[in-house]
Image 1 (cartoon, chains in turn orange, green):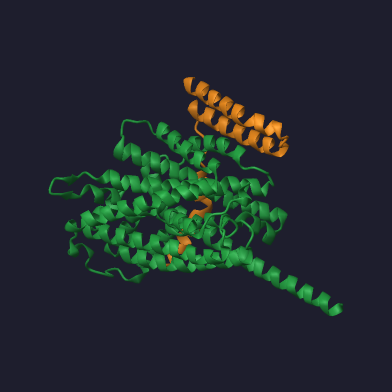
Image 2 (image 1 turned 60 degrees about the horizontal axis):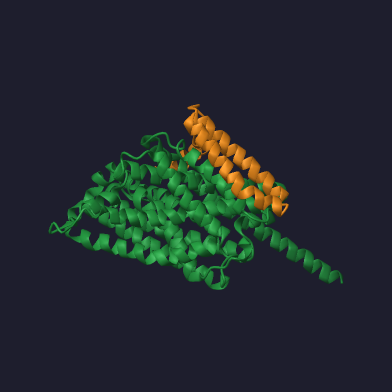
Length: 77
Length: 375
């Protein structure tokens, strides 16, 4: 629980640091992308802090690229 | 904003060198030695040769799109929709690189230097410094690279000079024991850490150079300097540790520095090589994250990339704890998955952009000629 609280505090800090500047200059698109990325980051951090196993992006890259790697290195075998 | 930032050619070639040495100096040698045994140094030299040809390819792309970053060039070549998809793949490559560098630093420090500190805190600290660098911008990063580069060279010379008493010539024999093919295989996996990630530098080359014409030479010089450093490191690792011992360590260059002992006065100097390596990997990580945020900002036509750095930093810390569950996973990933990933992003993608760009410029010239003839 402590970790989740910490993550929420950090998230709030990031919002306080960036949002006023974005609102002041009316950078709507930037604010939108910023919010999406921050929500994504905070969600993943909280899920990990709660000990929930998430799929590893590296595994997906492995599925795509390993056959190609085997083929390239196979030529030089 | 970012488009107005200009760096000098000297600063650019220093960034190229630091980016190329980055991970290569500490990690690749172990994998190379297990693959190629005592011929690892030949693989490194062959890899440097291939790298110079690769830089030639990047330079041609720079000629074709002189005022654009790589993401803009992708969009110009492939159109809006396909361009966006391909750009996202490139952005994913650089972000993945940044995350894995954070993991590598965390792992290195927790296994070799500070075993009782949790990896999370080291990752948070390192990510914070990277974000600081990226927010301050390219010019600041380039200037600090200029200040820190002499230290890298001094640390490197220190390592080489004091290692010479440990050299054993029999470790390097027999040369070419297994023929040429394993050497080429080694060279391929070497360049996937050494020069293929330099594709992220196309985000600043040539658009952010103050003299783009001479930038090409700077690109070559940077890789050549890094290549000389890497070749010497490889030869020394094999000569001092032997191929077997090099292969069995995750961080062979660090062990190399541990072996230094001159009259019991100069002893335990491995922190020197750790310092060298933290400097190079920091700049590599900054360049990766800079390419990521600038790439996102340019694909989505944002005016400022800075608001994206902190959320992405948060994501980086979270993912860096998850990215490699353990060292064997990391080793297998480096051997099997990363080389094709880097070859696709660092060679085939630029090649595609180059070919499409050439065809487009030819077509445009034809249309222009036709119109002139009509008139």
